[in-house]
Length: 349
Length: 112
Image (cartoon, rainbow over all chains, first blue to last red; front, side, top):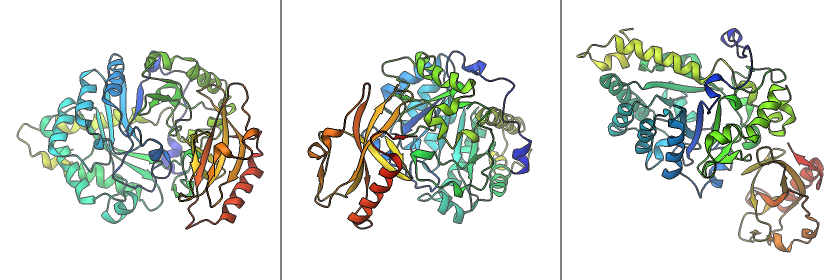
């Protein structure tokens, strides 16, 4: 285990629904699209049959997305726009994400950064999309060509710089972060230095390498930090107490491990998300996990990713850290400042 | 939906009555799977495993179809693993099917 991982507490004082999720999930992870313009070797969708299986539903339909946004907006829940492909390939991406913000949702977008132009940046930053995460995975073109196969390093840099400059110019509330998977061949500390101190993103998310077990052909040996966060004999999985996943057919899966959609907790077309969240299916999982019997459930017993989830070191921590960084940067910017100065190295910090 | 048997990723479920592996398609190893239990925590029972021949296979006409019996609350379908001729021979397909039958012990074995 590396030293930084050893110092972090991943458990909690008590387990159960997070207070913010007592009525409604804090986060809804949406499989917004399945097609992708990249072939990343660590991607569960590139290394599975799932894209093929969703050829009839490659994009989340507008009506379904708006149904989810309308209900979630009433609770101020986070819509996490990710799923099986590059979200900006959705023909209505900008329009729908802006709609979700107007409906009252928080929006976290995960993108490979290859498709942002000035118009899309202005739309998303202007709407205050809460967090835009660029999956970068590298800090040099040679590594990028391997871990982000099919994408152009120069395009990523140009798009990231433009987005940061516009964010600062517009004084947008959007946090802009980067992420990298901790995998062999990637110097994660160098990636962090390059993107945070160099390019000027608000935070670098270091992701554990996950295999998604039975869903993919990914090899865990690619991980360069396999140390577990949780003792799964002792600690319940946090995901079922804070979030759920929805595919482009409206099916709700129990968690992000079930990307093949073998579970069905309900369907958003026929049942409210609130009712699904408090329904028999989720109660079943929560009761088992709280009783220390999560491994009675075949899927949980076989989940190799449970041990990499954390009650403390998670998305909510990233949100907090990134927001603090964004506020610091904008506080140091005057109206006539050169916004590029901030994004090229954060020299004002 | 995907289902992993040993280290092999199968795709399915497809309807037994209408699914066919044609002679001009990639041959397969197939698994007949009965899905039971509640929708939120399904159980997958392996009913049968086999390999398609080079001349193809119609599951509706399969000689063992009569033995593919579902229990109360189960639905049944076929999952396939494509094994293109360029990489796998008929002997390879039979070997993989035998290995999986040995591991999952149809018709009672379950997929974890």
